[in-house]
Image (cartoon, rainbow, N blue to C red; front, side, top):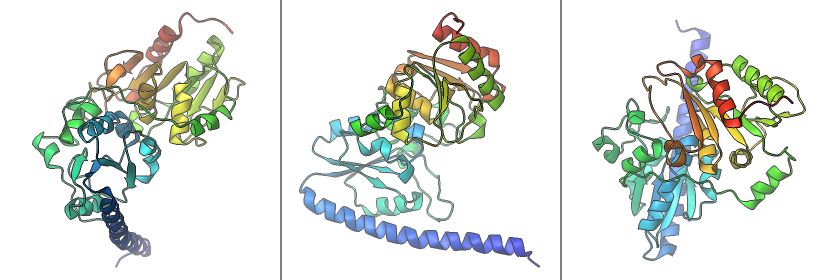
Length: 344
């Protein structure tokens, strides 16, 4: 006989599943109608879709795709298909005419099958399904490349690989972020100390992270050794200390506000995650902490200046996860960037 907790869990899952599927149907219908109406106003202009709906670092790294697609379709109406948390990353791009919020990969499949788009540049790898939907998203171009979630980081940086998955040449440009003046004013209103060291300590995946005690040790050493203020960004605070030159902005900033804070930094120190891609796109000198991720040992996700080794130090304990990265290696990298310590 099924226990009450298992029974409740089963029916909670079923409720969420069928609610999601019904919501997907209505979301698809409304978007299809919207796109049909949009196409009726475009005349002979093609409706062009760029599809890379998540993750933060992937979208930032692949920003040059928008510029390449605009070069190919100067008269096209170009939209980027994106999940709601990442709208900011594409909203202000000058080469885009708009964006469309994706509910889930299953909805993406329905819109592609509808033929509503005149041209599609799909950067997704096949078979990343919605947890509730039966549809299996397939990208024939990435399949021809032999691209899978087990090997994609072995093929090259994110832009190099995903641009080819979209049917474009392998792109290698510097990514850019487009930050409106309204966001700059919001960051200015925070009255941050000038030329800070910005740190980002926790990713969405524990395998990318460095221990909290190491971060706290590093920040204490920095405050004792250098005159720079230190700002922590991210979702959850990791550093737990009070100091007039330390400030946590975790959970307080939008994506583009975070990017602007990093852009103003003297130095960015962080794990391999979305904010590190912001540092690359913003021209900020960076120290990136990286280790083995699943079976990926020697990989680099960045294009442009970080790929060329300009303004960046990648601290990688090869063959070991980031959590095992020696503290001394990171401290040395910081010291090499900031110069000989000066007692405060």
